[in-house]
Amino acid sequence: MKTLIRDYPYIHLGLGLIGNAMFLIGSILFFREFDAWYHVAVWLFVLGSAGMLIGALGKAATDIIDAHERRRGNG
Image (cartoon, rainbow, N blue to C red; front, side, top):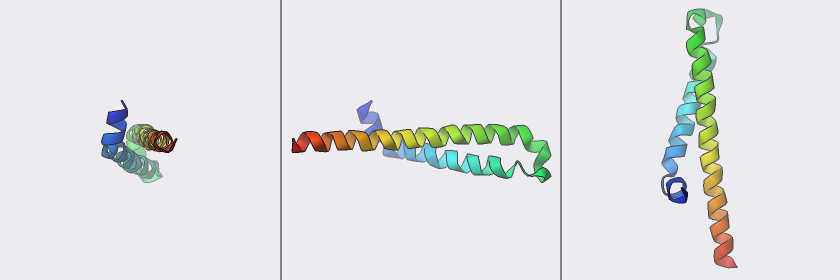
């Protein structure tokens, strides 16, 4: 798991960026002009939020692992 998190940071970065884009598009689709797209907007909003969360958790895990290894190396 550590290898996946640390050696492939572009995965959680990519998920975060895709989540941000979905969140933005979903937010725009909530305007009245796009009433026909309401259900799509809701799902984009929810999935985008999840993508942003996964991206943030991946970044946090990378930072925690790096900090732990730095402390171990200095101790």
